[in-house]
Length: 117
Image (cartoon, rainbow, N blue to C red; front, side, top):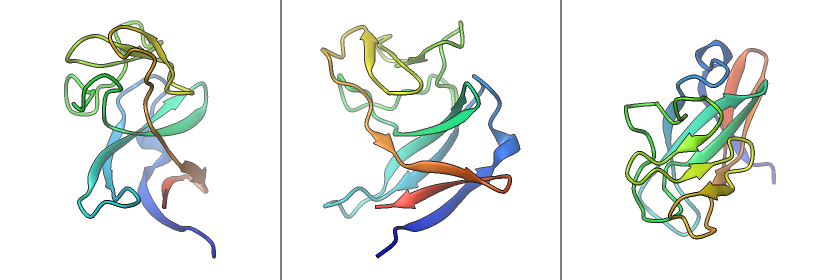
């Protein structure tokens, strides 16, 4: 059975290293929605659950702002942990090796979609 897909935004809403778009997903085995986000990095879109690997807080320091000032890393606004935008791997900070949880997103015909899993 194919996974269901849901429209998140127009592709034009995601600028390279710019603000992300927030959306909600229902994680497998849970009944309440979880915050998630999608960003554009090096021409591709990447989606993650909006939850720091260190403590369960949302990353963005302002609604949709996930990148640090250099626009090279995703950053946790609470304690400054840095994550690689393409992998979600923790690169430094208090995440103790725990990265971001990816969420499947893709781009097609000028729109960004997420998979419902």
